[in-house]
Length: 150
Image (cartoon, rainbow, N blue to C red; front, side, top):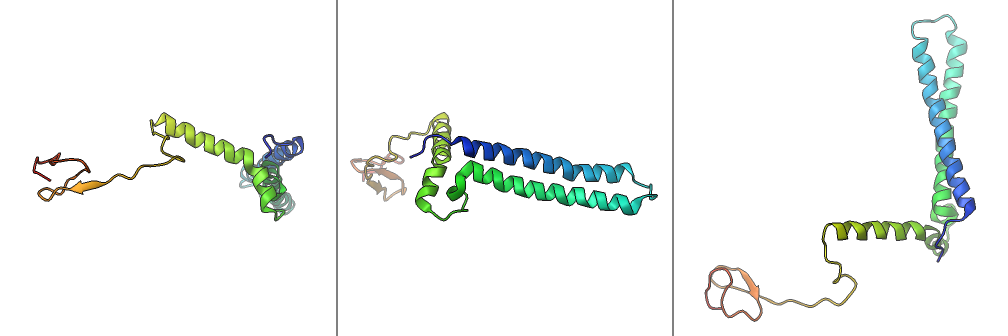
């Protein structure tokens, strides 16, 4: 199993993030220019084309950056670009391990006992009291709730 992410995937991830940032800024800049020229209709035709190109170009860069970033994060097989389940498991293993570690940390912080998970668990037999219907342990002679004989 791969324990580290390759340098190529890191480059793809950060390149995709940069592309998304540029696309986001380009997309937002078109709206900034539209609002800064609000009410000035003198060069509306030529400005509208440039605003439209920057908005569409920014949106395309956002999508392309997201795809490149996803492939960098999960690899070709892990992102679904290549259909190879075994390779996909290897490529997303660092993230699966990380998510499992975070879940374990959360459960430990919440004082949840993890000793029974993954190990053998004992079957517990409970006996219902005929008088009050409280569940009692198997070896109880009297009800823990009402004291009636079981």
